[in-house]
Length: 492
Image (cartoon, rainbow, N blue to C red; front, side):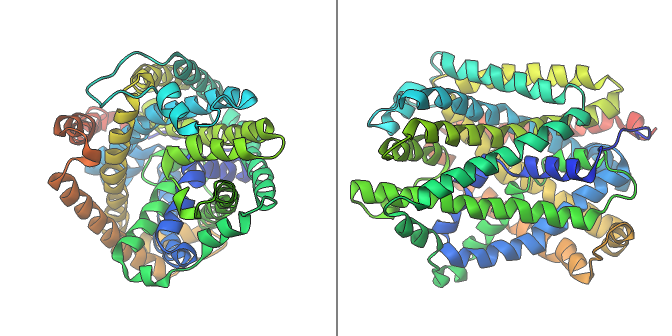
């Protein structure tokens, strides 16, 4: 176990890094749509319930596990139960799998900053994205050629990650002081502009109008827990790695509350910027707001460019602002995901941090080339589905079991309270031992049942096996192997 270890230069640096890893592309395009789809304003009830019963408890778990182990995810699991280090390595592998395709999405943002200068998508942003930017093939079985602009964007992204991580957390602490506030400034600019547009109020009303009838649907509550889990970067080895650089007297509870509230506040505020613009687009083309609402990449790379083209003035400027925001949102999460794997590798092997980061960046770039092909988007969709629904939920569930049942929730809570200004009570024990594992277990079982019954997304079964089930099984086997290989080293 690593003992002599550098620390964060300040509490602010750690909070900014944790917030930066949590706030990402999904805050802008995923939360607003999920809120609308699951009851609008009424969705805030299960959302904040999930934040307090899952988000805050697991944030405290990961912060405390990393701090007490003074090591990354595998070392943190091993410090409680040696045979569970495989779960930590699985978290590292899932984080690295995510960043390989996450960087390709950032590559699109690089390209769209350039396209925004001349509004290159013209009058049909959907056709431009599908047939010019991606030039999609018929399915995952047909890769096609590499899209050079995306490849260039991918290379720029990995160079940026390498530059940020080269000197370890010292450089991370400095970079996040810029990259975390910058997207917020961009979002404020977009929100102010959006709220001044005709039709904006219709969009905001559509976003927040409560539909309390949806709260009786269990899937709405599961959606809230899923959004909290993935939005806070839980189960991705990142926060465990960052927390391993905390000093021994670091406040765990306060840091967790600050990280959770800032992340969720950003998501909620992003909804105003997005739906005010959607209301304007609906007004311009004369259709109801629900007919222009899109989720995922379509919202960012089709719907929003369409909105930008409709703006009465300074359209290129607001286009650049929007895609710079996406890029800065993504970069914090991207280098955090790489650091989540680099920290335990450095601790387990003794190899210099710079060398570990260099090889991870080279490997990530090589894998990411798959997603720059014409068929790459299909593989991105499949891999994202399986690593999110099965990999991350399994890791978060393992954290609950290790801390709540093996180590003991009451004992772990005492360690948190020993250095925290805000003392947490028995509610935390109940969340970690009962509520959170129950919700995660149900989510995992439902995902397994649905996944077995029908191939995801209408893709061929072989593609679901290669990019889905096979990938998860291989990741677990590699995790077990790494846990056995570094067992002796990690306990030194």
